[in-house]
Image (cartoon, rainbow, N blue to C red; front, side, top):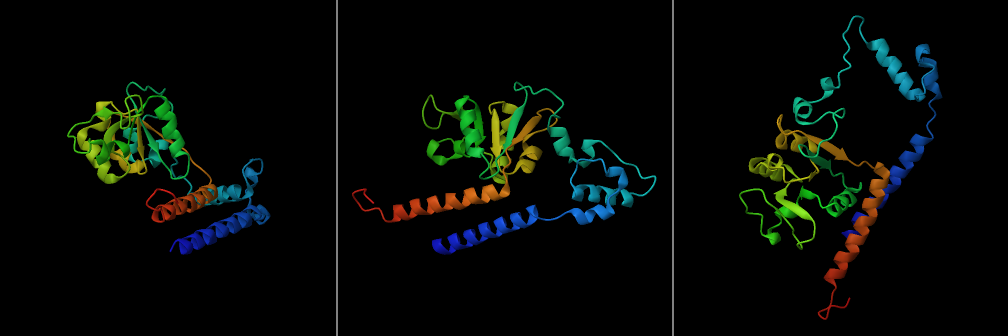
Length: 236
């Protein structure tokens, strides 16, 4: 089973590399024939200029165009988040971090822990720490008194986010950083007009993410296989 999964991941990785090489070598000069002369001085790539010109030709005369960013933003996001033009104020804002797998999320959490910030993710709700049945929001040190501080909720998915909403996570002001893999659901349910926040995220090239995940799975499989073959005296 492990070998089959590794073969599938290797095939996917090779396929992505081939696709990337094809895209990077793709010649965009045929689009020059359709280029709008008014866009000839633009520094944008040929394909982008072609698409912009095509969209311009399709826009009906007399149609109303809007430049407001709120026109393309869902109402709950527009009302629950502070605009980038407003200076951040940690005393009244709770930051939401969109954790994209294999994109620096673990490093980000470690940095916030070193800065002695209080985090909300999944750690604080683990039964082994004894706060998974609490009926109110509390912040505590899961491992030691001088270690990182977590809130007793799970904000990684919809079920935990709903529970955090019912317990009043954001209004409590206990969390400095909320970590989630479902930012849309979290923004809609954890924040409101009176308790707005900001969203942070780290992005990584998809091929780099795939390579990182590939090697992570190899190491993880080796560790799991080692556990299965550990002899009684603790030596492998």
